[in-house]
Image (cartoon, rainbow, N blue to C red; front, side):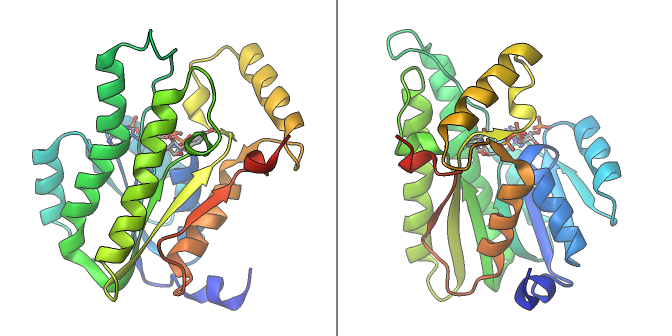
Length: 246
Ligand SMILES: NC(=O)c1ccc[n+]([C@@H]2O[C@H](COP(=O)([O-])OP(=O)(O)OC[C@H]3O[C@@H](n4cnc5c(N)ncnc54)[C@H](OP(=O)(O)O)[C@@H]3O)[C@@H](O)[C@H]2O)c1
């Protein structure tokens, strides 16, 4: 990493909603290593405590649920100042168009779009001038997959939110969106080991980089989105070439 990466986060307060797992946790680790003061937030206190022990560096924890608007308001109003907000919290619902229950579709939009929208809105009053917000979408917004149409749509909504907010916050804060391809995280923990490894191998072999992503691949991009003062309104495709694969 160059010197900008090495110094830009020293003493900065980085809040990562979704930081107890996967790419959020990897981002927390990297931010701590770069000298930031990091707060990780998610619903499960047990997951937060385990993640904090793993990350080290005095990381703070905050049990919050982005889908609980009252809880989000109360938590955010107690924050003193935030330099960089990252929102990787989400849950995904998959299913064929005609079969995905509407309740599952609504729950996914609550967790992946409305929750992050509310979280960003409530943290905004304490976001420092020149700070940043980083949202997460996913490759399915522009590379659809049968059985994941709803997930593609919610990803597209998050990308539109990021771009619109970048404009609304011009001169005040930068807003970007990370669009990961397939990344080996706890998000796939419900699958059997065999099915998961087979899927990872099959997708990895189809990509120009010949592997699926690691959470650390994405963490590097999040740090770049936080620290590059010329980057706003961008969707960063950190996907191993998924969008251009044959
Ligand atoms: N992994 C992939 O292959 C992939 C591909 C494309 C896009 N993405 C996107 O990338 C982002 C990060 O994915 P990941 O794989 O790193 O996820 P992950 O490992 O499943 O972690 C999700 C995190 O969000 C928290 N969370 C979930 N719902 C929440 C809520 N309502 N309020 C607060 N926290 C909540 C979880 O902790 P608690 O359970 O404690 O709440 C956890 O810390 C997500 O937006 C995902 O959709 C992932």
